[in-house]
Structures are given as C-alpha cells and as structure tokens.
Amino acid sequence: MQVKLTLEYDGANYSGWQLQRHQDSIQAQVEAALRRIFGVLVRVRAAGRTDAGVHALEQVAAAHLPRPFDPAELGRALNALLPADIVVHDCVAIGDGFDPRRDAIRRAYEYRIVNRSCRSAFECRYVWLISETLELDAMNRAAAIFIGQHDFAAFRTLGSGELSTTRRVYASEWTFAPERLIYRVEASSFLRHMVRTMVAAMVEVGRRRAKPEWIAELLEARDRGRAPASAPAAGLYLTRISYPDVAS
Image (cartoon, helix red, strand yellow):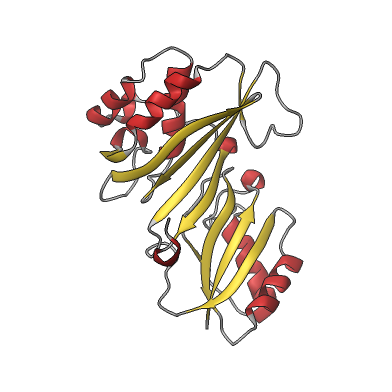
C-alpha cells in the first residue's frame, strides 16, 4: 500500500528535506515517526529536495507502507508524533506507480522580502531584510525575462549533477504590500539554488546596480561566475506541486 502525503514545514531548524549524516532533516523526522508507528524503516520520497533553511507550504511525498493502514488515521498519528514545525495536511492512498518527483509537471515557489530599515522580530527567520528602497517596476521587467524556456546554467549551484540546465518558466512576478515584496515563480522544475540566484539578480536590478536587460545577458552567458551569490534561504517557500490531473 502506498500513501501520498502533503506536508507543510518550517525549514529553519533543519538541514533541508533530504537525509544527511549527523544532521536533522525533514525526511529524517517523517521517517522516524513512521518507524514508531510501524516498527520498521519506511522510506519517504519527496517531489523536491528543499535546501537547508527553506520552508514548504506544500511539499508532496510518498511512502510504501509495510501493512494496510487507514490514511486518515495515519495522518493523525504522524501529526501526533512529528515536531510542531512539521505538519501533514493530507494523507491519501495512491497507486503503487505514483512517483512524487517524476510525476510532477510543475513546481511553484515564493520568495519573501521585508523592505524596511529595521528587521522584523517575528519574521527574521522567514524573510530577507533589505533596507534600501527597491524599484519594483524594474524588478518585474527583469522577472518577465525569465518566462519561457531558457538555459539556467548561470543560476545553478556549481557542481550540481543535473544532466540538463534547461528549464521552462511559466510564471515570474513580484507583488508589493506595505514593507513586503513577494516573488512568485512556477516552472517545470528547478535547479539547485536556481530561485534564490534569480531573486538575488533581480534585487541587484531593484537596487539600480543593473538594468533589467542584464538578466538576458546572464541567461545567454551561462556563466555562474557572472551571477550574484544566492539570496538567503530563509525567504524561500515551496508553495505548490502540480500533477497532470490537477495542473493549472
């Protein structure tokens, strides 16, 4: 029996989704809870491996259970055992052939910036604080350049093992609320640190250190050394995984 889990988590206290030696991770916590329920190791596979400090409003994972178990009961049992910063929103039975990573057709992320002179005591672990006034119109002109199919070699972590650095971006836009800038991006998939590097480049445009057209130059150059360092992990959230039957 296989179940599909939809999870939410605060990544501030974890080394990311994936199991890592001598470090705590979201996967380690979920698998530890499943071991307490079933008495054996139950592996959990996720749609995406969020990095250390990155949060998720909607992560999708799957696990093959060693014996039948009511999915609703399993969701309740997991929430009783998991730490408060990891929550299972939904647990449903699904066919054995479901693969949360390979079957996903789109992934969406959100990046949050607090744009004011002093930090937020409540949000310091969940946003990037930038004190300079940012030019939103220029950042949105830069964001629009990412839409479409491009080679994102300049926006990935060096040494990443992906066979292809080409990705298709379906949506890329900044919105503004008082003292807040929120970037939303949706793509077929993402390279490691791709969103955070995109954000850092657009912030350079917002700071008037570069023109929006610089984004096109970076894409064309395919040189990671020409792009800025990645934005902090704290502001990044995985917000949605889309599958063929629910694609928008």
